[in-house]
Image (cartoon, rainbow, N blue to C red; front, side, top):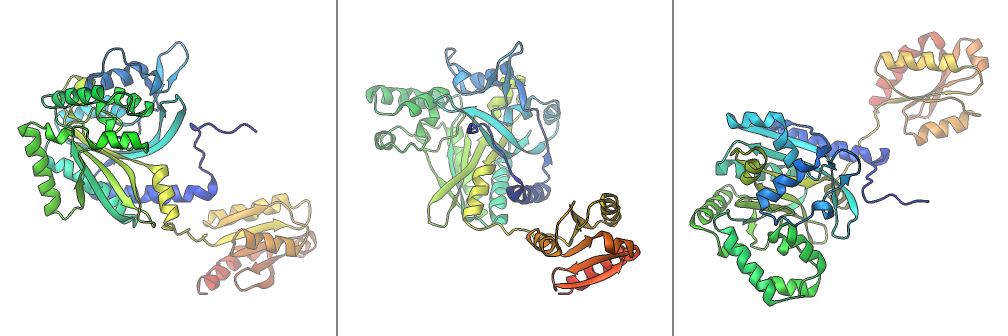
Length: 425
């Protein structure tokens, strides 16, 4: 059997409730902070994706994005969405941010390539504030991320924080980093070298190779190259976080996948049950990106989380509590030829908002009873030809294991009666 590629992310019925639980929590937090949901196209024009990255991160012209993005073959130059930030900035609604602050949140799939050219799918959610250059916006998106972690009962949420500087001070750091790498050739692995091509600051990715870790320990730190304005910005930000009692740690080696960030950059880190830390996502300020995309200055800040990583962590920490099935009526025929009666009974119950599970046929009462228990139903209605001729139907209270015969014409009244009795148990 052919194995699914990493690009395929299937969410099956026994897992979907976990996703919906998290999504409901996201909606609650979004409402608290007045963020509005936005949904952008998964298909994007290739130039729309590549040019903003190239301009905002100051990439060299000879860098190919074929090793990073998933371009589609065909007469039109299209790509699958590698993230949502650029698609939001390209949307028409963002133009309102020139005159008013806009706050959006989103939830959906994005697609990337690894350095080995394997394509894969990530499911991200994120929050963005456009049109606000104040430090308040930086702090607010961090507060949103921390609020989500606390609502989900995650252990010890923390912000790892640094600054990527600006176009005035960052070039001096990158020059120093290039000199350092030239003086230490072949020390870092291919994955680190490829990542650095697309974002020089991603040199600080957490590679597990010992040689890469040693190379990192003595590497120049961007925080040593910040200009006075960027230094004051970082100091003011940390002071606000301290006064708000938000747990954070300065990490000069912090890395994000893309290099378009300006000043504020952060990751959200939590602990698992074994005391190990896990990064769920992060973000920062990306004022330069709007200039590259729209040729207009729209200050912006935001963050993203990896939804699948979050759900797996919640699962390992046993933080999900499977919801109880609502009062559900199992309807089954023990005789052939009763399809119309089955459907009529189901239709009447649906008119009064009862949940039902319809099984076309079972051979015996006991097998029907067992199936109803397996499906966690509260009540079973079993039809057979002999009883139907008498105007009767078998009704089984599956909670109290009590069985009775009721009139076919009084099914609804009896279902209401047993629902009240079961809910009192």
